[in-house]
Image (cartoon, rainbow, N blue to C red):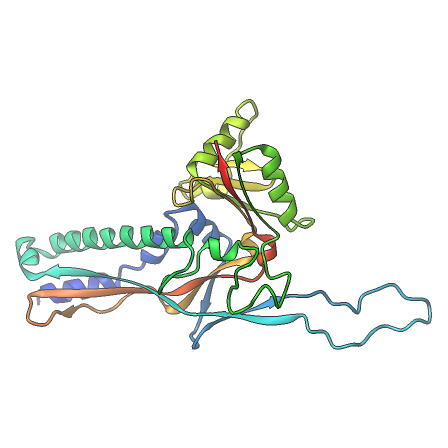
Length: 307
């Protein structure tokens, strides 16, 4: 028995499993977070929760041969929590279009084209949101995380001094290598260093001109994902991100950045349903998640810089 138009819509979407990876691999920041294994699946809960360290264990110290070791209780770990945010979109399949594109192969091609269009729209929205301060129902962005004063994940900087970026410098002047060195060194600690410098096109090209006489290297991981023109600074990959504000460079340690997603809702396509009083099938696609940080101190930013 031949499949009906509605059955083709439902079965094709059920088998379309690459939407999540496709969306995350379109832009350098999301690709880096995915490559670092920082997509944290959580089964649910009223809010997103991640543990954070906010103080050092102060029982550590030098003692005499018969000296005593402190056994004082240590309050060093607390929890950061934030809201689940929902990114959603729909794809509409009109019955007439389906009949005009007769045959299952033709219908599948039409459906894939529409899904691809939705994928591009959700990708663009996600990338823009990651570079925009949180407002309304949107997810957290880098401006929320790389801040020396703003509260984040329900924790106030006034309650934990280390719960702030170690370096967020806003100075209106041309970008210089010494600026990058200061930002990189301030938020790095030993081998725990910045691994991604997310840059606007303006500052990326400025940095490129500053190192033009030197050999330039491409990071193989991001090159494999299609970003073949990346530079490096020390051990960090420098990427051109067109969603980054024109006067900014973010110095990120992605070991402490997480895209948290709810299991089963990572760009999940619901079964197609027929729209009321219309000859359309509608598919809703949703992502439940947020951008989380477990250590703001090791995230930095240069702001106000020009070419």
